[in-house]
Image (cartoon, rainbow, N blue to C red):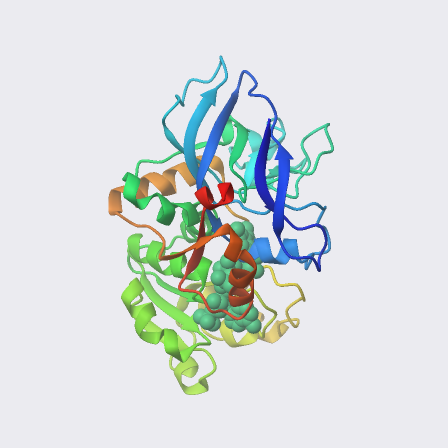
Length: 350
Ligand code: NAP
Ligand code: ZN
């Protein structure tokens, strides 16, 4: 069936109205009419081909919340009328060691991205949530138990939430742990909320002095302006883990210096240009690590959504109509958003 979407046709053309086809609902498929879609910095990176792998036309969007409007004969978890969500993945091979362990995001044959991805054997360019509807196999659809009036603010949990929750859990964020969150944007503001929810002592690092009060309001115990050397030095050798969400290349040594012995700097930001190489001595002295982490598994995403519903945790959002997407991208590139743009997908009908 043909539906309305917004697509970009090249790295230098703006997003514009575009019609796309969605597949017919197969026996294991869930059809979702999209209510809200968050705007991730990854959408901007890919729309503008900053990672060099974008297939066009590109319909971004991987923070999707909507209502189920059809299900296949074999679908058991969802019924028409349910609220459902889709994140960054819509499929994986289901037979490699990573998939067997329930870690689809590390699928050894490559999971299928919700947009700018390849469907196994079909070679097609998947198209994402800046659209009216999506059809996804049941195993990659999430349940949402937040209240109906929170659904726009739930959408960013599907990427910003899980991408910060997964490493926080993996590296043991919790009571008695000192955790840093670097970059208070879409991912970072969720990192602060989720690290706090898990019981850690949370320090927010920002390049924007104007975000200091706001970061405390998000739940940070302390805020450091990372350009201020004295404020940075006061935290030397003290962190168990620092989660770096910054969308641009920067000096990592300044954060390695703040790790305690055996501490880990976890990179989730995916900048267009590489970070300068860190100093080896900074890592050796204190047996420190630099690691990376990609989104999170379907089971872990469900766990995070359920936990956030119980603790009444959602994203802080600024609603936009799809017609405002280019302005939103320009503001995102300047770091001018508190903290996530979310598209009201009803505006696609206009
Ligand atoms: P965002 O909302 O733009 O936030 C990034 C934050 O980084 C900014 O708010 C800013 O915070 C800080 N920053 C400092 N210097 C910057 C600069 N020169 N340019 C841009 N930001 C700067 O982005 P996001 O949606 O949170 O995404 C962050 C990064 O994570 C992106 O690269 C995205 O592609 C990546 N990502 C990775 C995964 C994964 O699986 N690993 C998943 C999703 C997204 P302050 O003002 O507080 O300094
Ligand atoms: Zn994302």
